[in-house]
Image 1 (tube, rainbow, N blue to C red):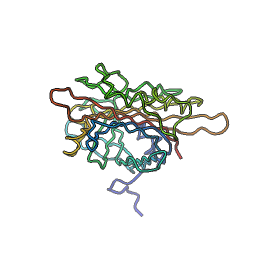
Image 2 (cartoon, rainbow, N blue to C red; image 1 turned 135 degrees about the vertical axis):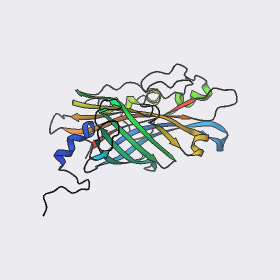
Image 3 (cartoon, helix red, strand yellow; image 1 turned 180 degrees about the vertical axis):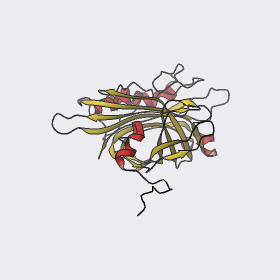
Image 4 (cartoon, helix red, strand yellow; image 1 turned 120 degrees about the vertical axis):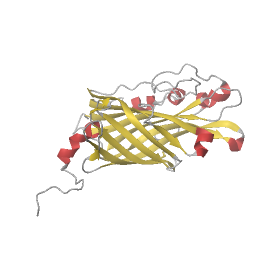
Length: 305
């Protein structure tokens, strides 16, 4: 048999391709766990502006490595090879086990480039069967010793002209009881969440569910990946079918992923994945009224199988 490498993009041994994934290198495999989902949804059928849906969640997240480099041809600089992963995300209600979300896509690691002049980045490309597709790029990548820093994320609707970052408080928070009453008076789901959570505090800040999940853990290393659909104006963003644009436009997505190495008191270390994700939804405003931005927040804590 010939010793010449095939002209097609044949896969290299795992220990060669694995490091080329950069901060994505620990993701290949199966991740299972639980989380929390909060979304304000239009309620046209009941002649109300919205209803607040709150779910505990069960999640199955699968990553499969794409064998071999993926060449991108350069005209202003030399060719580059990106390396990546297929993924499939399935989320179900923690109480009923009914399906809530399915998403497929790829993550890719882009090496440093000279034109444009950018450091190494990661990119998430997603397709969601509601009629949405997105491309988000990393805005922050970091490896740290120890556990994650998980800041608050606010679920309350707001009217800021410029949408603030994921962990930056909005300036013009809606305070009208007709809008925020469900946030202040709803209960947490009956199952699937860490014990001892305060309902109103967790509904306002779902990151509390993440912190409760790792309260007694010894996390020795964390890879931090922060992404946004606004990372590179003109080349990242969300596309929606016309129905979604008119009724509940998905405007922006921001997320932080923490890939954690957990050292138990007895036994070998294991890998854990936590994330917080915010999608901004805009319903059609009333005549003369400002556009209200509705944060759709998802958090989860998953263990690699």
